[in-house]
View (tube, rainbow, N blue to C red):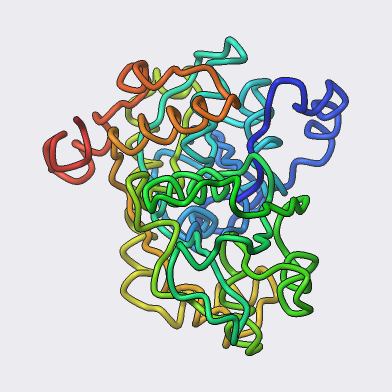
Length: 335
């Protein structure tokens, strides 16, 4: 998951041109040309470990929709694509809801969850760090303004540890530089999304402490499926999209090896790392309103968003999930 995008740091209009010329897609059921009798839905996503249910939706079969999958590197890019009409659906974080409202963009709805978990604190092997209090005086590598930073700040606060008593060392995103810093002792701990923690554990220089950033009040809700308002006005198409997401969620949850294979084929991830990473989160299409409100409020409390947590219910539509699953709103996460 990428760092939070703020209005000052959103990509410039040049990105729109890039998106228009570089969108690549694969259609539902693997055909090379979209069936004109079907509604085409372009879905923006990142190859997150636990979002494999979304980025394998091209394996669904449908008589009514053709899904085109377009990979991005950051949530900021996906968000801009949705705002500018380059894509009809987007897999993004909860914070993106607040970001879009701050940008004055309200032509969207969240219609399903995608996954929970996969966000961790990892300590250097042999560090002796066993409690939140042990982090006092330590250096923690963190992608600044990201969801994992909010989880860290919230967890420290709950544990009674002043964030001023630790040193947050910024890294532009997660990945090899952050992992290397942990390995070499430049930081004592790191917070990041998978497969960062799994990589350090498999390679032996990282350790999972008996506490974690996703165990606190903010919970482990991580990613949502958003649709543009124009698509939302076609309930049958949205239902087909959510139904496909549910199908892929059930298929991969029930076959961990197929999940690992998808990761290795699409990302080149080491199999051992993939197996370790998939165990740390859960594909989940429920749409939890309470956690969404808390996450946006946490970003707002850190000066990164306006506090629009009270408006979450306006943009959560449980109708597609109710129709696809047969479950009631309250069972699907409505407050």
